[in-house]
Length: 58
Length: 169
Image (cartoon, rainbow over all chains, first blue to last red; front, side):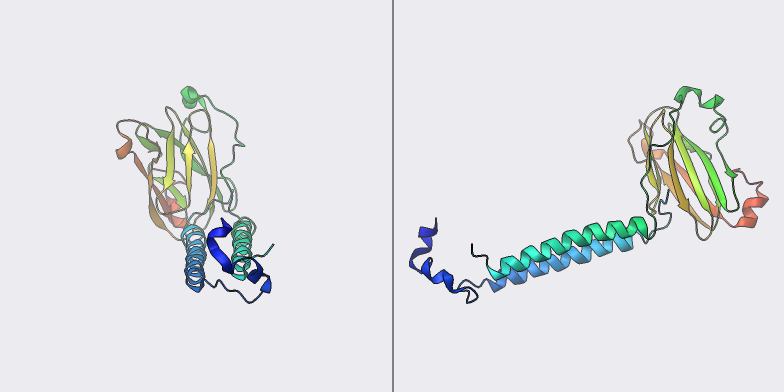
């Protein structure tokens, strides 16, 4: 499968931090998804669940 | 093995998210004291509720300084007593059982919600705040009249509760 990446892969990759493949768009999208997940969880648990009356305590 | 910097970031955030989920649920159990509906109660004969001292006369009774016990029977298609009248700013333990089929017991718009299984007693403890009126409904399909099966839970002031004789009228 790596073959399909053609000549640039392989030896070039040892560089470490100097990433050649830099999918900033994907990172941004995943960051947005992550923020939605965190906000949704905070809302569901702390506002909708704990914030309601008559929480079962026993 | 080379792992892309973004992927490392994503893995780290995933672990943070998992820890945060576990952490918030732990906080809920330790802080506000959220509990599950336990199966600690002994079983009961659903056909013999009339002879059971708790359920022969469904009611609310005071058992401590600020503690009340409510005995509720769910049936096709309603709840007894209705309304269930409990005092404000108190701790109320609801014991709910069914005399026929499986029902649900949900105080609408709140977190108080349990299944009601014939032969079992569901026990949930809640803390009431200000006087208000809640609807009560069955959320387990229980027969042709399921959609009309409802009740009421009235939280009334302490003085009003005592004026009623401490029982549900």
